[in-house]
Image (tube, rainbow, N blue to C red; front, side):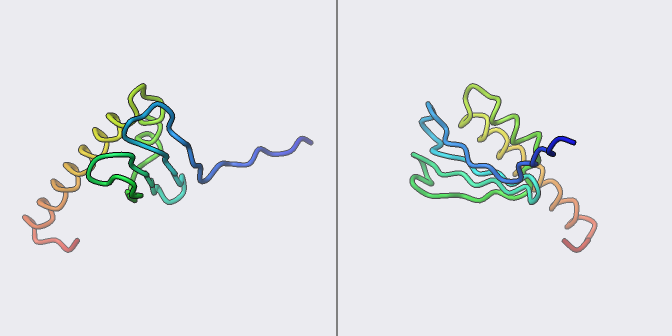
Length: 95
């Protein structure tokens, strides 16, 4: 019997050629994404984003412009969360 391949749970990728992102760390079990920014509001900071599913992560990593695609994914997540929160408040549900 051959050895079983190890599943990669967390990986760090240095982003070459991006003017926005230095590196990305993604955890496939916890759906946590860490991003170190090169410029902008979060220059030289590492930001943590929760709830980034594998499809969203893959979309960013497969993109030619990882920074631009990441911003689109984060904007969409923010809009989805805002809609969800309004829905819960409207129906007076606990969040």
